[in-house]
Image (cartoon, rainbow, N blue to C red; front, side, top):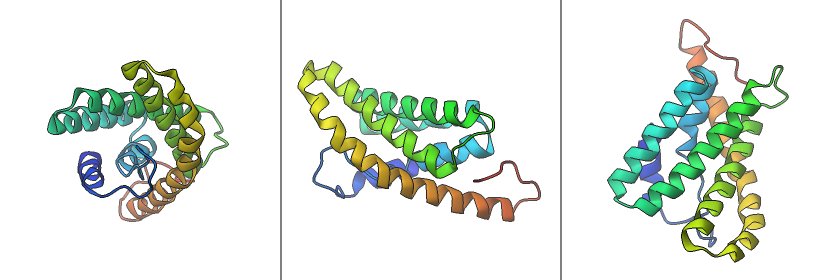
Length: 159
């Protein structure tokens, strides 16, 4: 699901005139995997999505950017998810993941082009992370509720 969403989103025109600002549809698969399958499986989903997406696009730079963002989003969402009791809803985790994704990708871009001036771009990316992370979180919650409703067992509680 994540790979398909990633490929679909990469074929769409950008929503905003900010380079790199995307909705983050592929992160939907990671968020759902985290809540329904657990952190290890969510990591597998993230790694496979990023690796396959990078191979299909044939770009090492894209692979490095995707991997840094995907792993950062997974790590932050997993850390917050593991807090017990977690004060964060699935939407809150998604927003935190989107912010971590944007920050990590920007950090990787700075490493690749060796230009620290790109850090000035971070506030804009973080502003974009809030509504996009919110949208993905709400979508994940609704999909999760539908999945629980149509299964015999509820694997996770979707907040």
